[in-house]
Image 1 (cartoon, rainbow, N blue to C red):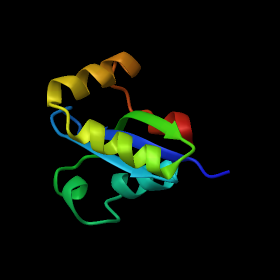
Image 2 (image 1 turned 180 degrees about the vertical axis):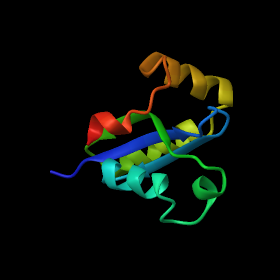
Image 3 (image 1 turned 60 degrees about the horizontal axis):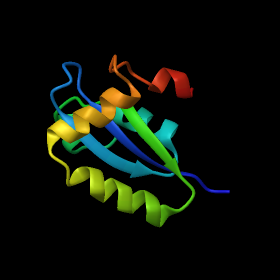
Image 4 (image 1 turned 30 degrees about the vertical axis):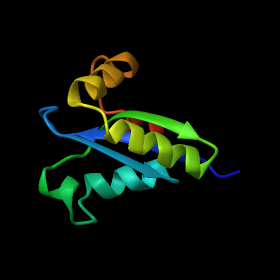
Amino acid sequence: MEQYFVYILTNKYNKVLYVGVTNNLVRRVYEHKNKLISGFTSKYNVSKLVYYESFLSVFDAIKREKEIKGWRREKKVALINSFNPEWKDLYEELI
Protein backbone atom coordinates (compact mmCIF):
# COMPACT_ATOMS: atom_id res chain seq x y z
CA MET A 1 0.00 0.00 0.00
CA GLU A 2 1.43 3.33 -1.10
CA GLN A 3 1.72 6.20 1.34
CA TYR A 4 2.11 9.88 0.55
CA PHE A 5 3.38 12.73 2.68
CA VAL A 6 2.93 16.47 2.87
CA TYR A 7 5.83 18.04 4.70
CA ILE A 8 7.22 21.39 5.78
CA LEU A 9 10.92 22.16 5.88
CA THR A 10 12.65 25.21 7.26
CA ASN A 11 16.18 26.53 7.51
CA LYS A 12 18.52 26.72 10.49
CA TYR A 13 16.92 29.95 11.71
CA ASN A 14 13.27 28.92 11.06
CA LYS A 15 12.86 31.86 8.67
CA VAL A 16 12.03 30.11 5.39
CA LEU A 17 9.17 27.63 5.03
CA TYR A 18 8.92 25.10 2.20
CA VAL A 19 5.88 22.86 1.66
CA GLY A 20 6.24 19.71 -0.42
CA VAL A 21 4.66 16.36 -1.21
CA THR A 22 6.34 12.97 -1.73
CA ASN A 23 5.76 9.24 -1.62
CA ASN A 24 9.04 8.62 0.25
CA LEU A 25 9.60 11.11 3.07
CA VAL A 26 12.97 9.76 4.24
CA ARG A 27 14.45 9.80 0.73
CA ARG A 28 13.04 13.24 -0.10
CA VAL A 29 14.29 14.92 3.08
CA TYR A 30 17.69 13.27 2.53
CA GLU A 31 17.76 14.85 -0.94
CA HIS A 32 16.97 18.26 0.57
CA LYS A 33 19.57 17.89 3.33
CA ASN A 34 22.29 16.92 0.87
CA LYS A 35 21.27 19.45 -1.79
CA LEU A 36 20.94 16.69 -4.38
CA ILE A 37 18.33 18.65 -6.32
CA SER A 38 18.99 22.26 -7.20
CA GLY A 39 16.24 24.76 -6.56
CA PHE A 40 14.57 26.69 -3.79
CA THR A 41 15.56 24.45 -0.88
CA SER A 42 19.23 24.22 -1.84
CA LYS A 43 19.41 27.97 -2.55
CA TYR A 44 17.96 28.89 0.85
CA ASN A 45 19.51 26.01 2.88
CA VAL A 46 16.10 24.59 3.74
CA SER A 47 16.67 21.13 5.21
CA LYS A 48 15.05 20.85 8.65
CA LEU A 49 11.87 18.73 8.70
CA VAL A 50 9.47 20.36 11.16
CA TYR A 51 6.09 18.97 10.06
CA TYR A 52 4.54 16.15 8.07
CA GLU A 53 1.23 14.39 7.47
CA SER A 54 0.60 11.05 5.76
CA PHE A 55 -2.10 10.11 3.27
CA LEU A 56 -3.20 6.95 1.48
CA SER A 57 -4.32 8.88 -1.59
CA VAL A 58 -1.97 10.92 -3.77
CA PHE A 59 -4.91 13.16 -4.64
CA ASP A 60 -5.59 13.91 -0.97
CA ALA A 61 -1.91 14.65 -0.38
CA ILE A 62 -1.69 17.04 -3.31
CA LYS A 63 -4.92 18.73 -2.25
CA ARG A 64 -3.54 19.25 1.27
CA GLU A 65 -0.19 20.50 -0.06
CA LYS A 66 -1.98 23.12 -2.17
CA GLU A 67 -4.15 24.09 0.80
CA ILE A 68 -1.15 24.65 3.09
CA LYS A 69 0.81 26.46 0.36
CA GLY A 70 -2.08 28.90 0.10
CA TRP A 71 -1.93 29.82 3.78
CA ARG A 72 -0.24 32.87 5.20
CA ARG A 73 2.95 32.26 7.16
CA GLU A 74 1.20 32.74 10.51
CA LYS A 75 -1.17 29.84 9.86
CA LYS A 76 1.71 27.58 8.76
CA VAL A 77 3.62 28.50 11.93
CA ALA A 78 0.57 27.66 14.05
CA LEU A 79 0.30 24.27 12.32
CA ILE A 80 3.96 23.52 13.02
CA ASN A 81 3.63 24.69 16.63
CA SER A 82 0.68 22.35 17.20
CA PHE A 83 2.67 19.37 15.90
CA ASN A 84 6.25 20.25 16.85
CA PRO A 85 6.38 23.17 19.33
CA GLU A 86 10.15 22.97 19.70
CA TRP A 87 10.68 23.03 15.93
CA LYS A 88 13.12 20.14 16.25
CA ASP A 89 14.31 18.30 13.15
CA LEU A 90 11.99 15.30 12.84
CA TYR A 91 14.14 13.58 10.22
CA GLU A 92 16.18 11.70 12.84
CA GLU A 93 12.98 10.10 14.16
CA LEU A 94 12.18 8.71 10.70
CA ILE A 95 15.45 6.93 10.00
